[in-house]
Length: 164
Image 1 (cartoon, rainbow, N blue to C red):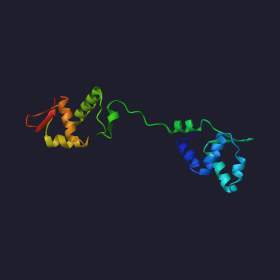
Image 2: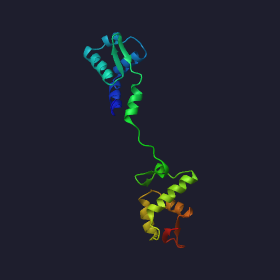
Image 3: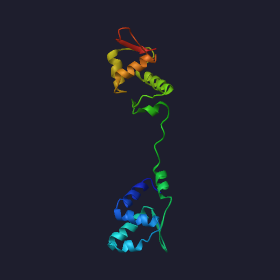
Image 4: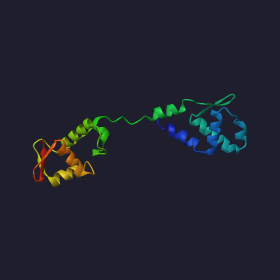
């Protein structure tokens, strides 16, 4: 099954009549009478769409649903890799949420600290705010968290910041 198999499934089931036919096949109900009651061209397109999508198989006795089609479509689509560590809280280098768990919070703050300043660098409050603005929308809250956690030191008047 190809990577876009789910698209064919959705396209086939987008039509009300096609869903009705598919439901009848899955529930092992008569399909021929229902198909005969709709225009032949439409009935043919429905059957072609359902079989092309892999939802049903044509058998000598009629149609048979393919039970594994949805599992196969999901497996072929894949899923994004699970993010781990501090990456769970960052997206594109920006902080999307502050972790509630203390250990996770500390790890995220340590990661941010290493991105902000070099070991012996001291910067003004305006500069630290500009750097933090690239990471978060809550500059003051993140700056305060870094100071409270003991990762950033600030002068008594709050005019300069450095790593501890």
